Amino acid sequence: MDLDPIADSPERAELRATLRRLIREVAPPNRVAQLDEAEQFDEDLFVALADLAVFAVGAPPGVGGGGDVRDQLVVVEELAAGPTSMAAFAIAHFAVTQVLGTFGRTPAHRELARALVDGRTRCAFALSEPGGGTDVARVMQTRGVRDGESWRISGQKMWTSGASAASHLVVLARTAPIERSPVHGVTMFLVPTDTPGVTIRTIDTLGIHGMSTCEVFLDDVTVTDDDVLGEVDRGMRQVFATINREGLNATAACIGVGRGALELAVAYSKEREVFGSPVGAFQVPQHWLVDGAVALESARGLMVRAAEIEVAGGDAGVLASMAKLAASEGAQAIALRGMQLMGGLGYTRSVAMQRYFRDVRLWQFSPLTNEMVRNRIAEQHLGLPRSY
Image (cartoon, rainbow, N blue to C red):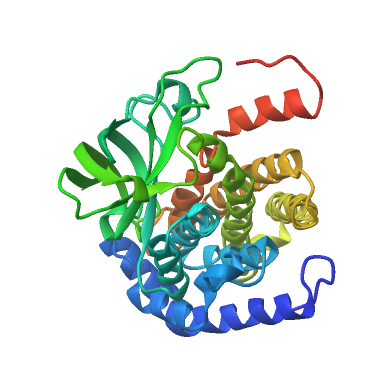
């Protein structure tokens, strides 16, 4: 593996090499395929990553974390190139750990954050609802009502990643009516999944079969003031701090998926012959593969620059948006063209190309749809009127 001194420090390059060795040993392609077909979480890989302290990467030092978003990007990319579902899990884990480590107020919050970092438990983030995702603050129907020193929460959440195996949920609920801004008046609560009134159902999805996607029902769930994360009525503002990082991690996932699909397509194009020559000897396949490589490295450049700005304390929002847009669309194009290049073989479930295509679809609309990403770039970077 060539060292990229711009993207990877020597320590980061060593982390990348260590992860690749681990993935080859614990999650080879045949195992990834078996778990994808069975729609099962890779418990062995989870334990191995925890032993390597991967789940501590980028977490606040006060809860046992170390490193920063640049290290998270390495972790997510390497996982996404193979066991993509674990990359999706890592993104969700990093977001929840950041929220708990930053806004946890009690010893119990800090202990839970340490358990997450150590890989001793799992938590899920419940934000989206049936009536809205992008504009969830405006349409949020989940309500938190104060009842003495307690709160009663009722509502429904959708697309909650990993909830079926989580010990706790971070739930956002409206606790004050909308006045000037829909962002105000939303509070974050930490809710144990075994609390009476919590029901979790798994949603059947196209991809990311190695991690559950769930709907969560909250029927008069009672929590206390100690279960509030951060400040009452400021939950959405607190969440915004995680959005750019989640977008960067989604970029890394797309680069990983795109890289895996590109490597598979290149290997096939060298081996498969047609009309007496390798498929890769023809112009059209070569151009497809080259376009894919350029798309991935262009996205990587945006991602690395955005990460450096974030670490330095700057605002990387626009660059992070550009990176996510470029990476998700580039990776999807690689997987689609890879399927076309492989013909009937690319259409079979025994080859990973179709899984790469299914899995990478997630980041066309998560954590924000690419259409909304374009809207925000138009407004924030080009100074155009808001279009929504």
